[in-house]
Image (tube, rainbow, N blue to C red):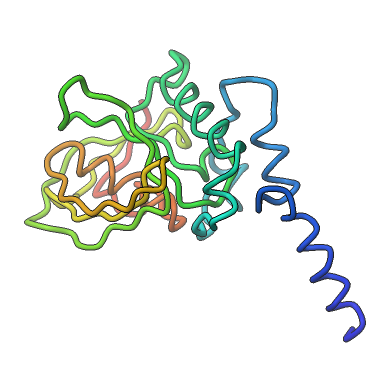
Length: 194
């Protein structure tokens, strides 16, 4: 067994040698379709329930990241999905990346957030309806905080800390839960089939 450990470490390093992405991650990113496969429960529970990890310096500077962000945006805005946010685990990658529709900004742009963390949950909770691309056909009533303090890197690598309120704060909570293997049904007061 001791002889296998260095070999396994060497193989792992080789898998992440190009841009820091593993071979499996590059395969997901490199698929020809611009609309990515969306992982759903229960079949894809291993990826949807796993803890996501930060992007390292090599991944942050890689062309694969730009391809991934473009594909995540195409996926969440595709009429077959028509979502307001998407997290990397939903497209098969356990990385701390989310794309969120910014209802709190002029023009309501979709934006990408890298290595995102919720630093604090602010205010009382309010309950409202939620759905999820990874749980098709279900809806639920979920209590969420009215505001959040988040920190992240922009796609250009700029560190940002900001406070977000209202419906956009709810989207951030939902998407960041995905990065920790949590689904809205875990927090819901009630869930029903549409």
